[in-house]
Structures are given as structure tokens and as C-alpha cells.
Length: 321
Image (cartoon, rainbow, N blue to C red; front, side):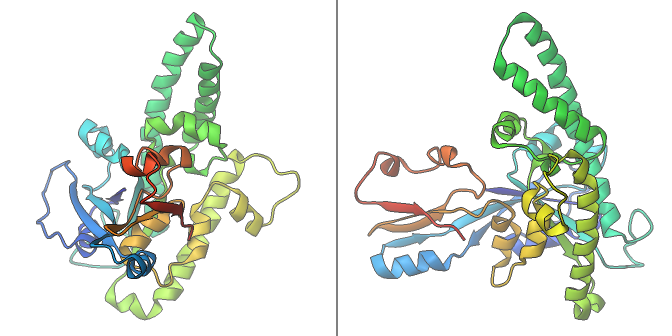
């Protein structure tokens, strides 16, 4: 899977990329290209299976991280920047929490919730351009031919347009599986799962958990306010906990979940998506792979031929977290 590391200038994106991948490279001023690195994701279940089957090799899952130049209106108008960002499976948005006179914040003050909202708005506006162009084409196509699939796509995109025009990320919409599948191919940026990474200063370390809790509370309030208008109306009023459970503003769930006992690459990549892995094993190899978040219908495209042909030598099953 590919996780794009994004954020405003001077927030620590490249530092996070280096920590996760071990790739050291000087910053390229003015470049719109993302640099790539790979991190291995250890999995104790694979190690346990290896002890039983004694394979000749063990292959752990990997996460490819893309270190993107700072997000800006100009960057999101660059075709190569956008195309690279759209193929990512998830986003890791680095938010600056530290103060520094040597490296001042580009907006003059440190406010991670503001920065989070500003970047979400830019991503939403980028998606809005795609939606409007597609709706124009659908208007013409629906006049030429009667096709229920086109009508459904038009309805879904109209709903997406209404949300995006109000700066609401598409991931906050309460879309059913059919609607989400219909728009998945567009690679909408605001639909991608996103993980917010807080970059604290050394002096803030003693208050790390307190700062995290404060940030979660602010984000929960912001998400609830932003998403509420675009969720399906409930049969009865929801409390916050029920809203967290039922809404597609899935970030709320992840903020509540925590990452106790999970390695950094897994927390930054694997846990941001639906927790499902494919593990295969035999006497030759023990392997875990497949990006989290794939629908079961799409898993066949990622499973080796020997497995999809039903070889009795390989046993496999989904292993939920």
C-alpha cells in the first residue's frame, strides 16, 4: 500500500519520512516530485506461523511512503503532483505543534486544527474541480442514452458536489457501499483515509498525552460540526458516541482507538485503513500482504495465482485485528 505524507511547509514531513523508511535525502527546493521509501511491517502472527511451518523465508508486509512537497494551491494545480497524490491509498497529514523562532510557521502562529482544516479545504476544492467536470459530461451522456448506472453516478456526484462546496471532505459523507464503489475510481483526495500526525517539540514531551487528548477533543468537535449536515438523518437523536460509531467520519473512531503496542510503520500506514490482512503460508514461505481497506471482491487481484487456482499446498484466511 502507498501512504502519502503531506502537510504545510516546515512541519516535519521529511523527518517523519526518514524515521519511517531510513531514507536520507536533502530537501529539493521547488520540486513537485514525491520521493518514495519502503518500511517493513513486522507481524507477530507471521512469526508464529513460521515457527509452526518452518518456511525457508519469511516475507512481511511493506508500506510504501511518499514524501510530498508542501501542499499549497499552486501544488494542487500541478498535474504531476495531483496524479501522484491520487494513487495513494491513504494520507498521513503532519501537523506542527512546536514553536520555533528559527523556523517560524508560515502563517505566523501554531494552530494545528486550523492547519488541518485549511489543508482539508484545499483537498476538497481539488476534488470539486473533478466532480464539476464529470457532472458536465454526465449531463450530455444522460441526454443521449438512458442508463441507470449513469443516473446513479450523477446522483452520487451531486451529493458530493454539495458537500465539497461547503468544504466538507467526502470521507465525512454517509455513503453506502454502492455509492462509494461508484466514485472510487476518481481517486478523490478528500475521500482517502487520513491519519493526523502531531509533531511536538522536546519541551512538550512531558505533556504529550495531555496535548494529544486536547487535540482529539478539538478535532472531534470540528468533525461532528462539519459532517452532521451531510449524514443520513437518524431515526432518533444521536449522542456523540453513537455518532462516532455510525458516521463515516471514521477519523473519530481512530482517535478513540489509540495505537498501544503497534509499531510506527503499522500505525502510520496499516491502521489508517480497514484492518484486514491476507496471510498465506506453506513450507516454502510465510507471507502477509494486501493493502488494508480493499473490499473482498478486490482481493483476488492481489492474491498469487497459485492461491486463486486453489492449490492445496497453500492455506489462507482473513485475519482481522
